[in-house]
Image (cartoon, rainbow over all chains, first blue to last red; front, side, top):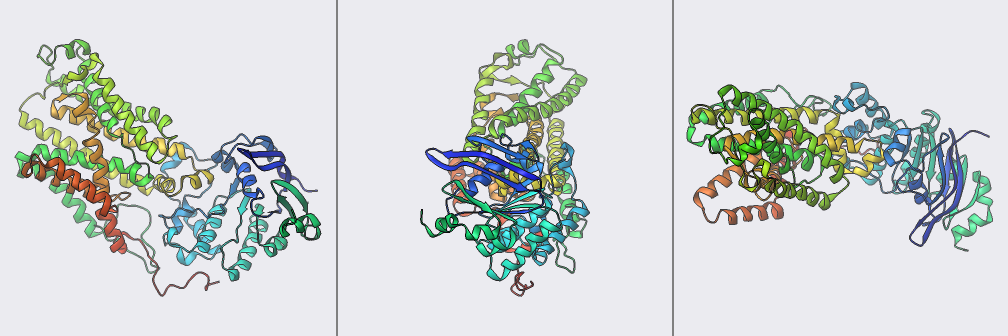
Length: 248
Length: 367
């Protein structure tokens, strides 16, 4: 058994009377690709938001590299190297792609006077090579807000890589992406995992994508953990099939 | 306007905002020469020209938050007034008891030698800059928890409250204000003296902003403007950037307040130091008129606005507020992008902005 880099234990999160997550426990293995699936409204994004400190959890514990982070604020968690992308893609619309990349450098060790640094040539080159990696090099001087939704998604992914995260949480990376582009994206996610050594935790509705990619999959339904296992085990699990076909 | 050159790749020129093309040299040189020559050619307008540079300082400093960072402050005038009062207290306090000086209401029992005047003024301006920045850090802790309209109203509240508090504080003259130490020597020389200070301040603010926007700081401000939550999620020290941005604006506004207080010779809290409904709103209007989030927009806006204002005050006296109100309505309803914003949309290549051409190969096809 590999070392767990994120350990979530008995996390409960409610919004008023609605229980979004109830007693959820899961581990994300270091260096692996972990999938998180479940029908709409099953609490996947809520769990993501809890992990990255977007809102406080009601009870339970979230540890990153052995450190309790459930009380940390969003920026502190991001600087630890735990980064997320958004389901509704978020980029800096009135800046061009290169500028989007340049401001996405890791801010882990940023000292006060680093605010007034000129853009280092090395950062520009790294940003451009990552834009090339996601296939946006030709578009690098266009305003990010003028890109198509799919391209913005790729830009957001490149920005996340620029930040050199230890773990990357991806919220539906293939949603809204042109089907012919999805294979290319799967390939890039795998390369980010294998070549850059980034641990991935992926929310995904596209079963083909997640079954192909993930080493381990967790399935949520109605805010509770329903099943976990490899792609093969999940596909055979009767509870999971029922949840997706609406037997509950 | 400097035309950005592009290399064979179509890439806009990178890095330093201070390019040395001929057009840019003529533009910057022309402004410098005009700034020096104008009060000599039209000495009768020296005060109005001084105020023009002050307006440019207002617009450029407002745009740091309002345009570049997307935080619309209605309370920046607070730093102007704070600087004015800090400077007055330092200038007087260095050589006389402040309370007794303000009690005498400028009856002239308290003289300043020439040396005292100039050392006091220098110390006053320095103290105004430093303390205004400090106030920005203190109030920033409170108001930067607010977003959107709540931030605007919160900052407005700070400025209004400051005016009222100063008005009730007898030690600094209360509502009846303070007569500033008079300029030693010929008042005409004094006019040029303060003109030169306003001019130098405006030029300094311009150069500083141009440098600031060419560093990581500029990108971080724009990132906060475009999506602050995303910026937080990427680990950017957003609060640090917001605080420093506001204290930079406060630093220069503090200096401008110190200069203006000495230039007018008499300061009081509501009309001169914390005029939220005149200077406080003008700052915002000038930037909107010229184009927010650009380096030239605030300058263009300040010049157009100041000319319109002076002309209506001269030829439409009695109706000047109506004309000003009409201008506000026209800008807000029909011309939100401002002059430079409109130019950027019409002629993006002038600003080194690339737009997608029809024959560009889409990224998908390049796979």
